[in-house]
Image 1 (cartoon, rainbow, N blue to C red):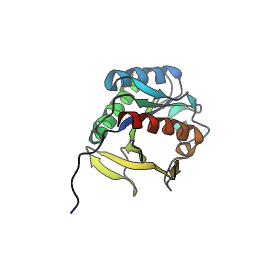
Image 2: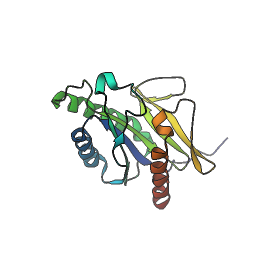
Image 3: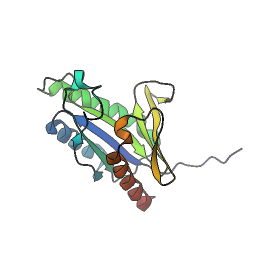
Image 4: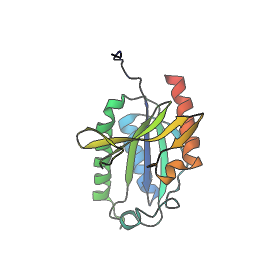
Length: 177
């Protein structure tokens, strides 16, 4: 029998995408009010170059930004964070004047030295149920000094932009762990 140990804190990660900078700024303010300062932030880049999956509900031109937060979190709080970001999406959609049915998408997860975990409300063969209607998946693994995609890894998460950002997240995590 293995020894049961407490898990180490992890780096909260949120990928935010929207058709407007206004939506990204709004969600950034919400996130920092809830989770504290953002330590690492990517440039806002064109997300629609990776997929047109969201075009019908979000519009054709989408911008995405990645955030890593300064304050480590307990990974067991991921379902609470996902439910909160879903509430923010609904709130923004209810108050937004944009024509898109879904003007904001927030994908929280966390980074460890070995992996990137994303939360989801959708079940699939590679996802594990956590609680309260929330699932999680390992989206990327860090092996042989690089981020490695899995068969289900979304195309954008396979890009050099993400990998560079996630390497910065790992380096920051080393300083706090």
